[in-house]
Image (cartoon, rainbow, N blue to C red; front, side, top):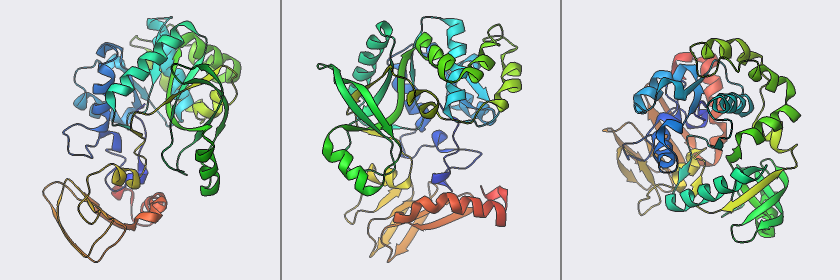
Length: 352
């Protein structure tokens, strides 16, 4: 899934080039490319499909020239993850009605790649033979308020840390997050799912019947020249809803594979800061050169080749891209979306 705008990373991430297409760590590969590389070690490249907004077709082909246009699912409107997944599952079923599928965001960081690959293979082996919806739960390292949580119930497979899901909880406050972590019963919801295509399509039939019917009427169009016109006709009328609300919180056949493979959803500047190399005063400079005086705990992000000279800042984000400079307290980065909205209304869309 590669259709998000990534507005919390503005001004680095913009509508024209969202964060999944950016190289944050100077590796020479964008987050999308790193995700593609990771899954290429698990499945053939021709079996990897990219779901994204129609605006990003050229960017995807530029960054992933090894895939065909049929592997790109172009959404004509943003309708959250449930319609995106319904589209992808119907398209994949038309190619292989017994397909075993991994669904993953394109912009996550995985530090322990070998362990990630091992866990995905365990998950695929399980869903191949079980009519279960499987989620990846991440062992929490701190009481994080920016993630959703999964509460575990009975253990299904003691060898592989596989549990029935008891409850899903949206982003909790700090006190509740602390209780969750201390209990040992809760895992972060990674937003990665594994299932057999028939299992998830049956769940759409049961819980999102109207949406399911829309996509099923196009069975004769998938993987043909008429697919895009069909999707353009029906997509905007789909409910704007996440797969979590649409299916996972309603279904009884949901399990969680508890894992620890160095995961971060890279959803905020704070998460980039956490996973980046720091100087002796805990400052992070991304790609640019910097001279920092009496500075501590900052993120400095300028275009490559630029120099930042900063004095006296503590716990700030300083980010410049194109025609925008952002200076914001790191502890208040949740306001960046407000800054984006205000800029669009008061200054102009060309800055977004």
